[in-house]
Amino acid sequence: MVFTMVFTMVFTMVFTMVFTMVFTMVFTMMVLSRKQVNELLWNKLPIDYTEDQKMFKIKNLLYKMHKHGEIWLDEDRMWHKKES
Image 1 (cartoon, rainbow, N blue to C red):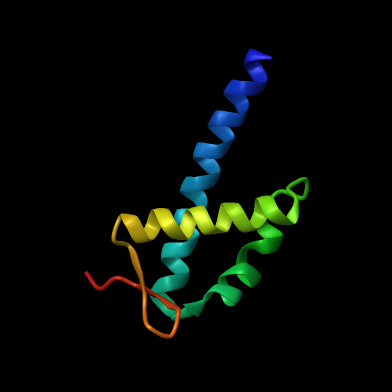
Image 2 (cartoon, rainbow, N blue to C red):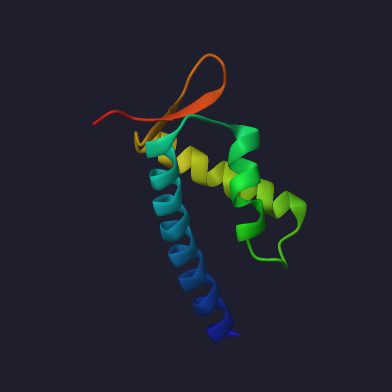
């Protein structure tokens, strides 16, 4: 039980870091809509996630990156990498 909880926490932290790096690399190259972000990342998420869990994970990653000032959303609902 404890092992499962610790494993889940570590997996979530590593998974979030990897996706943040992927998002940063992708956003340096282009501007993306939410649909494009979903298409890029959908199959990279664990296969045992439900569709709702995948949507929630992508939404949270976008929110975290937006909150930390790494990306921004324009009036056309397109995600951009923040200029340095």
